[in-house]
Image 1 (cartoon, rainbow, N blue to C red):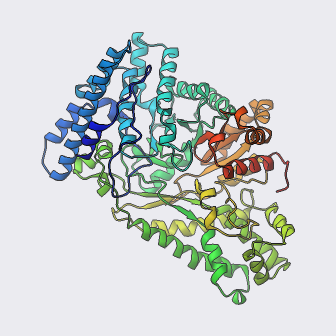
Image 2 (image 1 turned 90 degrees about the vertical axis):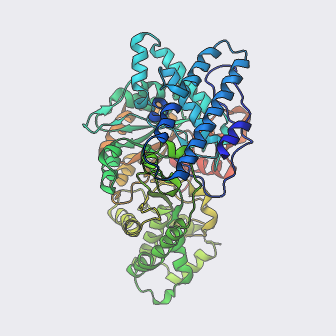
Image 3 (image 1 turned 135 degrees about the vertical axis):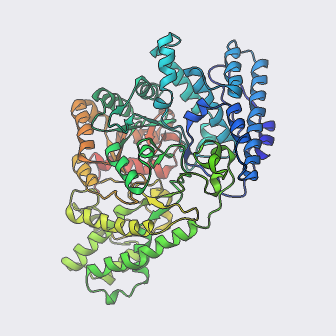
Length: 625
């Protein structure tokens, strides 16, 4: 009864205009265990089901699990309470359009949504419930596809035109942008509110419609960092849609992120997702692919840090016994990395999730099996891990091979002692280690091989383990933890000093050769369990795009054909960032891409501001790397 009691007590705040969207930031339910978050419910069910439909479903058929049904009925009772309270508050308001919204809310009780505008309102009504009950990082799903029929129905009837639809979408996005501080997690802007657009269908055709364009146009015009959108792309994506996507990115808003269906969908199918589910994938809070409405979907549950076991090796092993580079690599791959990953798996299998009747209502197989999502009731019960510092690890190994075992410029024990002392008094060596032309992010056979060998090791371990629900583990090469994990890691052989930020995603911060980076990204192995978000990330000066717009558009299209997995860009100049840090009042609305989300630059901690400035300066060739 916790949800019903909560919905009886929350303050209802009816906005003066626009959609009805109200969250009481100071009230929630008491949760003893981990909340299931980082997930998108199936909003197709939201707009096509009513309370009557849901109650009828639970009232008919065999009783398999009475405790489950009791929780579900309690939740629906709570929804009825919330509906009646919002309707009452609307009745008491001075809004001239209150009858329309009262009708929209009343319809939730007995009917599916009947119009495009009503569907948007219904999505907001259920979305606010998730936030109110303590869920975080809540995605929106494939809204262009979900809303397709109602949009074209209203268009044909003359209920709306394209411009009116655009304005409704903008109002919808602004409603979701409300409570920005409340929804943000690790950093301001980290809300997980992502809208998926476009995508390849099972028949091989590319799906897009007016709404695909209108959502991107709305994000571009509003110029707010959240909600964000992701565009699924393929060789059949229309050029004018890619053009619109680039024009949005060029503003610096950070959207859309690009996801390559020709890489992602086969990876999902090979892993074991049903074909139709793979083709209907969305992403979790940032970029982790997942079938919509069918999964436990804990895709950012913990981060693998490749550098931790490498440094542990050099803190614990007898280095006198190491005679060649292959010994180091074998010890890392056979002992330290597996032990580290096994420890993560053990920790994951001890997690206990909170019972979740809201998610169970909208996730396939929970209702059919009468088993809560927290107990393994979903169709898919896999855990998704992210990973960080692959670049630091690969560069460290390459430097060891080159300077210790090939050139002999340094003794292994000597170099390790220098590292342990945080390279104190060895600034020249730090510069050498950091400035190797052959490094992570470069299209070099040895670097690519090292990268894939390391992820092969993790991949094999994860594929041979199962969680307590019988689900599997998966991982990706991108993570938000490149700064948050930095305090865990001391100096490394790539020239990184104690607690400095780790390498980010799939990137080469020492080069502006985007084509070389794309070639590198296309040769990484994303097979097996390695599909949980793999973002090629780079900085671009706005003037570069402005002066070479058509060529840059060609680059985006050809890059997908080359074979990147996913892509994001930070379109900003170092001059702007430096001035914004020095004079924040002059840049109140400056937006930057942080990891899988965008944020207002002024909201970021100084460590993130400095990191972005340094990356931008390196990209522009203005500082020694």
